[in-house]
Amino acid sequence: MKRRRAAASFSFREFSRLAGELVDKIPPRLVKDLSGGFHVTPETKRDGEFYVLGEYVEEGALGCFIVLYYGSFAAVLQNAAREEWERELWETIRHELRHHLETLAGTDELVREEIAELLAEKQEEGNGST
Image 1 (cartoon, one colour):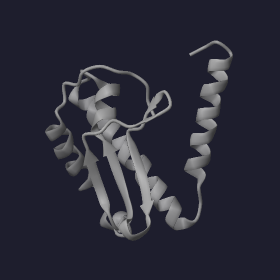
Image 2 (cartoon, rainbow, N blue to C red; image 1 turned 180 degrees about the horizontal axis):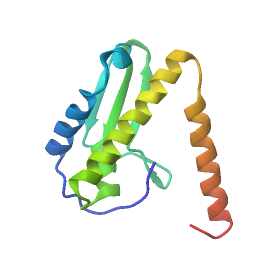
Image 3 (tube, rainbow, N blue to C red; image 1 turned 45 degrees about the vertical axis):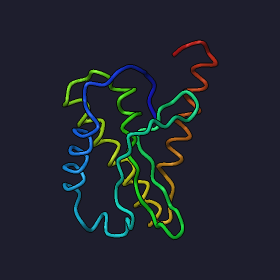
């Protein structure tokens, strides 16, 4: 999750193409049980004050899939260089894929790390620093 806001210089079409290129780099054995694959949406998603860049979803009959929110990337990255968009997108894809793999393994270490990160952020805000 990230904070920021403004116009983007990287189009939805460019973002979708780049996401496809990056997903194609993932070894097939790591995504074979990702039944719904990867989805890119123009939407922006927020969780409180944070932008949600990607999300691992387990949805009964739809299976499990990863959603990448272009609108959230655009809000966070704004006019950043292509390299920064690519770096952030690759990091998000790997992060969400880790959620998937940990779910298959029956563990939730990443969820624990995220909770600790959010608690630390709230504690910093409570201490008056950002």
